[in-house]
Length: 99
Image 1 (tube, one colour):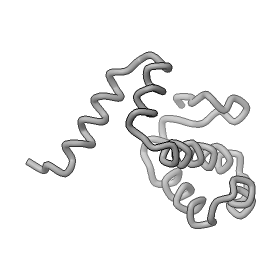
Image 2 (cartoon, rainbow, N blue to C red; image 1 turned 120 degrees about the vertical axis):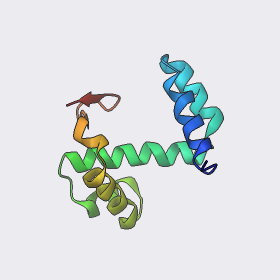
Image 3 (cartoon, helix red, strand yellow; image 1 turned 135 degrees about the horizontal axis):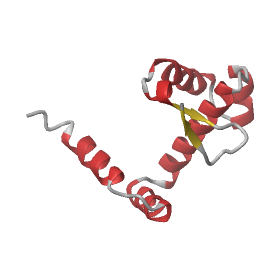
């Protein structure tokens, strides 16, 4: 058994068991550092702006992140099967839409 993936599976099971948004926020705040939480929020902003066809350099400047950070986000957006099924709703930053 690959024990390196076990904590990831535990995390996925934990997060999937939470249906209440406030409880999810509490769980994420308990698991993640403030900086990690901010980095995830920034990654979601990057995805949203990329879906709006905002140029990568503009995104980097707007969010005050490196171009490599935006490029990693673009690669994830392009290569992840998750985004085949879900899209960020540009005019509603707190929503993700199933395609």
